[in-house]
Length: 262
Image (cartoon, rainbow, N blue to C red; front, side, top):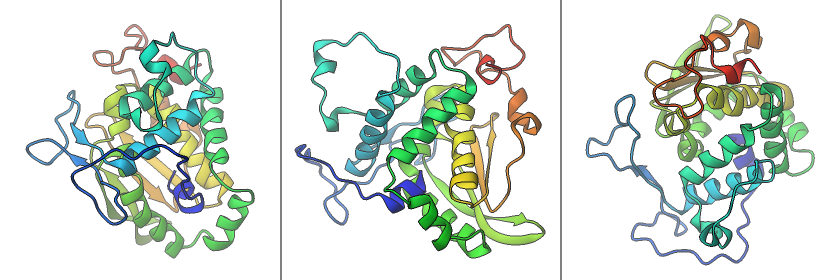
């Protein structure tokens, strides 16, 4: 995730950059919410975004990496000729859903781990541990990086003050309404493909504890750098039911999302 962006520079091979009207810095258009209010849409509605090249680049990069583990789909002529810049957020979410097919909860999480590791240069975890030992400064620095670099994945967010081991620090990030969750509408995808593997990656691979606490009532989420995550069985998300009215994979008869039980 954010660490992947920090350690692995993007190398886009040969694709022709599409023309855009708005550019920032090195000719890369940044995205923004396209809602008239400028804020995320209400619960149950998908927020409209205007994605730039930066965002589309990461959507394509992650979709292609994850596509290697995804269940095969019947390709149309148009899909088979899809270029690098033809991927969008819906494509990314669709690949995520196909990764879940036929895999247990732990297997889904392992795929995300493999994808993240594949985007890092050799020795990156060890290098990160040296640069960012689990200190207040490291936690606050990563929180600050999360806001701009996670925008393509989760939408708008802001750094907030939290308490870690009795110490107040600005190492929290409040995601206003998670784009990944609202577009998938899937509790299992949120937990198995984002929350748990991201927590584990930071905590176990990089040695910087991270706890993510999604709010399934408004689709917001709080990331707490420096805070050790609880075991899955003790995490409230392990008992979360499906979004039965908006999830295409929901099992309304189950009191707990079946994707969390497998």
